[in-house]
Image 1 (cartoon, rainbow, N blue to C red):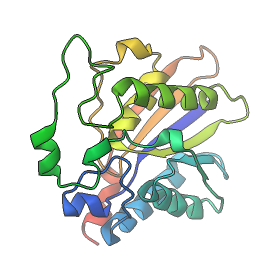
Image 2 (image 1 turned 90 degrees about the horizontal axis):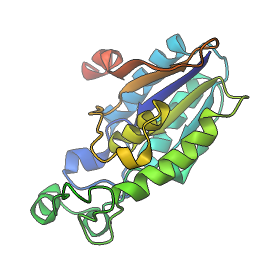
Image 3 (image 1 turned 45 degrees about the vertical axis):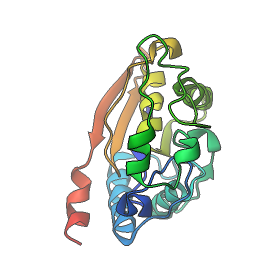
Length: 211
């Protein structure tokens, strides 16, 4: 079987500071590091391979999460900028309240190509790079166990591509994924069906919440 684990990065400083993330390069908090350890421990119970392929967004908070996971598997991770979160352009690093006040809602007739903030990515631009990256990884016959570390909104399109949703139909899709969550995707050997074994799994975080 092919098993893919989509991980959303752990708690980062921009969460606590209530500023816009996107491509703003925030680091993990101390609590985020504890969450990443909890993710890694959970993955060692789920992943059958001794050395899974680990690929991460190249933003610091994702890379730091990936490094902690890789250490638990005694391996290394690879950075891929196509797994980044959507860019919020001019709003990045600004208070979340600023983005809320300046956000231009997506019209129903142009959700994919609407640019809600100056210099921000469109949903199409985000989805295109996620689809391109993950299509190559999903079809690689040499990868049976894959861990992808990305971001909350970006991970929606990893899942959408896995279940075969055409990009042009991804205008309204949104999987509400929590920080430090794990989503398990699987392809069986016989029928080659793509399934979602678990979505937004967070039970592993209970120990980190009390640490």
